[in-house]
Image (cartoon, rainbow, N blue to C red; front, side, top):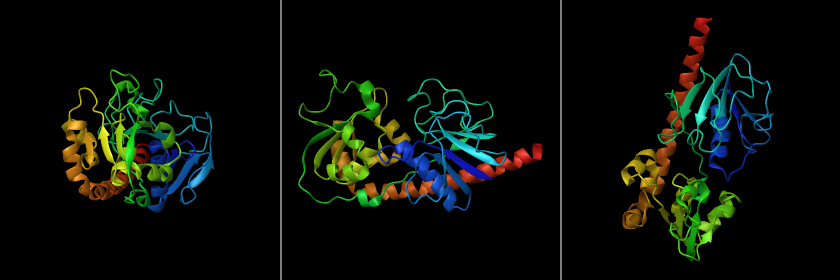
Amino acid sequence: MKFIVAAPKFNDASGGVIVLHHLANRLAELGFESVIASSDTFPENKAKLVQWEFGEENYTIADKDSMVIYPEVISDNPLNAWHVTRWILYKEGGLAKPINYGANDLVYQFGAFHRPLNRQADGMLTITFRDHQFLVNQKLKRTGVGFIVRKGAHKKPHSILHRKHPPRSIFLDGECKKGVAHMHRVFNRLKVLISYDSETGWALQAAATGCLVVIVPTKGITKQQFWRDFPTFKFGIAYGFFDIPRALITRKHLMAAILNDEAENEKSVRKYTVDITNYFKRCESIE
C-alpha cells in the first residue's frame, strides 16, 4: 500500500500547502511508502518527491495499490488514480470553481468546519505543523495595530462602513506571504492583530508570540459555534472586541492547547491509515 499526496510547491506561508507536505512526511515516518507529488518540498521531508506541476492532467504515477490524496481544489483525477481520497482543507468550492469528484472517492474533512457539500464525509484527517521556535514571545517593545484579510474579504474590511481596524492599521496580507520566520518577527513587535479571516493559522502564531489577537466575527456564527469548529482558538484569541478580557485571561493556556491539538492530530493520522488499510482489504475481498 502506497500513499501519494498531490500538492503545490512547498510554501510555508500557506497553511493548506504546509499540511499536505507534512502529511506525506508523517506517513513516511509511520513506515508507509509515501510520495509527495509536487514540484518541490521541504528538505527534511521523508516522503519521496515525484516531480509534478500542481493540476497537470494525465500524469500517471499511481497503481492499484496506491491511495492518492487530493486537496479539495483539485477537480477530476489528474494523476489517473485507482483509489482517491478528497481532503477538504477549506470549504468545498470556497476557493475554486465547482469541481468533479468520483462517485467512489473517499472524502475526509480537515476539521468540523470543513464539510463536503453534497455527501457524507468518510472521516476526519487532521494534521498541523507549527514550528515551535516561531511561537515564542521575545518580550520586545510592541506598537501599532495590524490586520489580516485573506479569506475574510466577504466582511468588507476595506469599506469605511464595515471595517473594524483603526485607520492607520498595517495591512499584513503581503507580509504573510514572506513566511513564518518573517511573521514571527512582525508579531513580536505588533501590539494588536485584527483578523477578518476566522480560520487563519496566523492568529494562533500571533497570539502565541504575545500579540493581542481579535477575530472579526462571522455573521451568524456565535462564539460557542466558532469554538466548536476551532477549539484551539478558545485560548488567547478574542472572538470580537467584547471578548478581549477573556482572551487575555486564557492566553496562558494557549501553548498547552496547541500541544494537545498536535497530540490529537497524531491520533487522526494513525486512524486514517487504519481506515485505508481496511479499505484495501475490502477491495481485495471484492476482487
